[in-house]
Image (cartoon, rainbow, N blue to C red; front, side, top):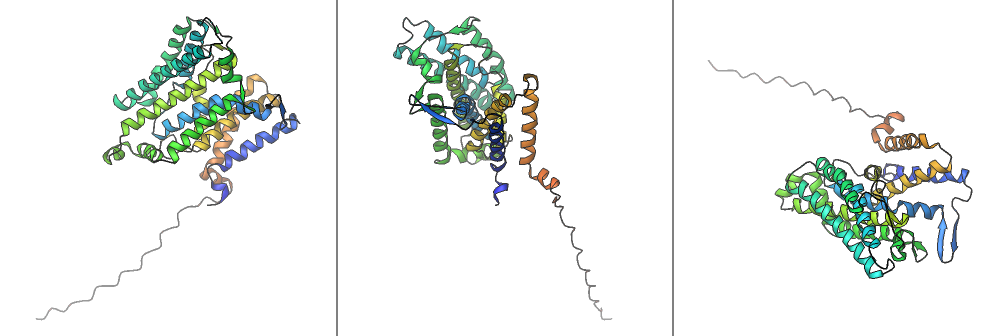
Length: 351
């Protein structure tokens, strides 16, 4: 198969074009400097700010691979950040490492329970995924508001600040967390049979069930995984802004995550998926956000510009569209006429 037919060729090409365009408006865009043992630069900022979206897109990929969808990931982010910040703000010493770890564990546990709720509605109750997760999408914001009593909770915790704004090994901690989650997902889905089983459920749930695959269990697992990823993303977001804002946290991130998955080549109908493609899609979206600011696009037209770029990318990924544009749309050849049947020999009946 030629390179330009690879599913990641066009996303990589668009990402390269976006990065190159920034170079004209910000000559030092690719400059990365080491200061006080930390890496700084525009590329590092893209990776750090895109870490929450990478995590959410990672979980969304496995959910979509089973033929489902999860619209509640943004609300789960808000719930996770709200609970962690409230528990930390109630600590006598917000710099207590043990107290911060307990708050983080409680937030992730609540996120896991949210994933179990979604999974039970989809896999056991048989509710359509878009409806089942829409329930938590709406109710989740209310839950986050109840946790924070409708207020923005500010925290001044050094250990908690490390999650979103700290550095380790010269890299942002949030980037390392996202990289660890991607590595774990790759090992589980590509080094074991789990990935093949998930694709089988997405291709045909009935056939996979008849083949002895525990389709319900797998669907429950992927929704739990997506919720936990969203919970970690919520911790990163709230840690980065040092507060819990139930309205702003994860707002519309589910749409960006779905878009990243589609850009990466995973079909919404389920089946084959690409974790690398989803990560690439998330990086493209974050780079697109930076590009809008870099080239001075007005705020009121930013969403329109993003939509145009995404449409172009999706069209470039369409083999049919490329064939039409290049004039090589192939029609099936006309069926060749079958040779005339030879007349049957006459049989003489004796008198």
